[in-house]
Image (cartoon, rainbow, N blue to C red; front, side, top):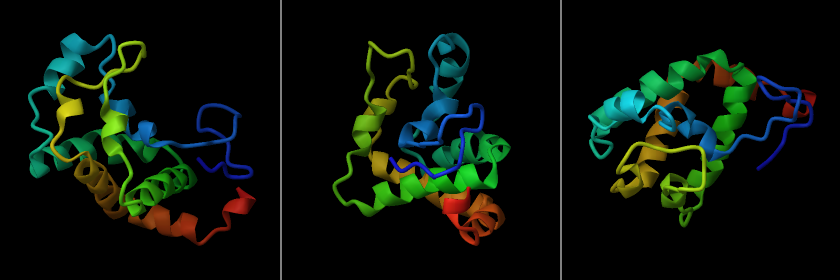
Length: 143
């Protein structure tokens, strides 16, 4: 994934290299299966309205703490993936028992993972519109 010349991580001094997995952080139920996991399992991720509500609550709402530049860079990665017709969004949702990150049960069986990520993109562009325009007006090489 692309690194911006000077854009550093929001919580570290390392170069910021966002991936699509960053969008899933708010849904990580590892060691929270009994709380967040139980709550998220009540939502039907195949229902566009329920999916949109979670995206707004847990991604576009929570990620407002990121700078406008970080949000722009993160959304750039998603835009590129969505432009690839054969991009395997399902692979991002697959459960890996060796990993210390976990999504809610059955999320890896979502009917249309591409639609989930397309909804993230659409809603983030709406909710972050002003900040994305601000970042787009700048030269990322100066970050």
